[in-house]
Picture 1: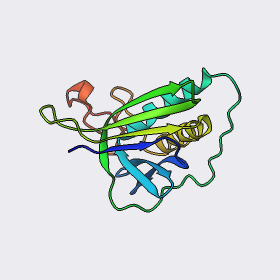
Picture 2 (picture 1 turned 90 degrees about the vertical axis):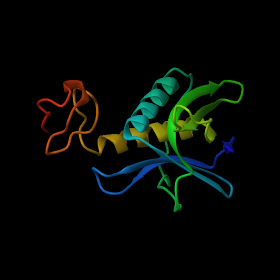
Picture 3 (picture 1 turned 90 degrees about the horizontal axis):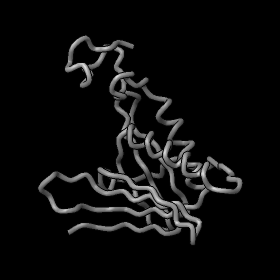
Length: 167
């Protein structure tokens, strides 16, 4: 049975990592009252989410203040699930940015868990800025496939494994 996490007015929404560069685990975390939801993502998902939020917020009228204070990850046991798909929308009536995360499931599996995070513009802006910084702090991306380059080279799917690019 799938679980649905709905945080319609979170006190905090952030992204962060655990582990050393090259082996980092990317996470998105939200707190609303005593409820804490932590989800595991891929580096590319964090980058795409940050870029999309930035474009969305630039298209909205009015100034946005970005406050990155207190956005460190909180202690947690295990992520609730690994994110497969992300969707972003803007609720004009409530002036909220909504991020919907759905669990990564196999092709023949039933729908998994999902989380809906409805945040203020300021929270979305801080999430976007923090996400960009996290992604840029890691290994550089391969110019062909976008996957992180390893100092020893990497097997790029765009070259079918031939002539791995080096950093």
